[in-house]
View 1: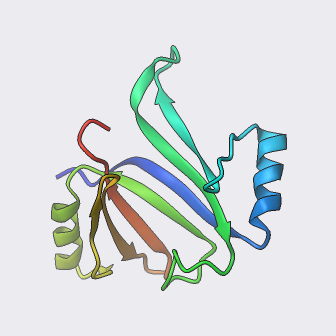
View 2: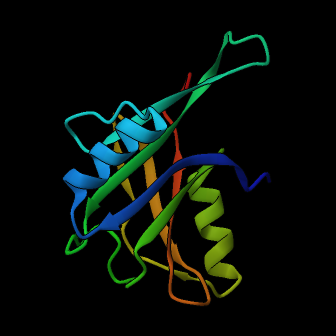
Length: 128
């Protein structure tokens, strides 16, 4: 079974998300949207679409999306078979959080790494 196949997103907290959005927009050219992030479409070496997206997002420092982690960041990793990977991680003794979410955006699960960072696992919907 393949485990992680790529990075689906980078999420981090900021004391002043609006200022961070403006800084990244102005200085790095990131097209920050009203929801607080940007979607980078994957392309091949020639610039042609390659069928994937990586999300970049800044949220408020007091947000609870990373709980129970106290880390100011969370990485979202793309996976091929979320349920199989979650089962394997549990069998290996990893601290897998009990909730699995399924929506039009795909399937999501979370595991805590040995230093208490919350890691998001994402199986995109078919075709993405």
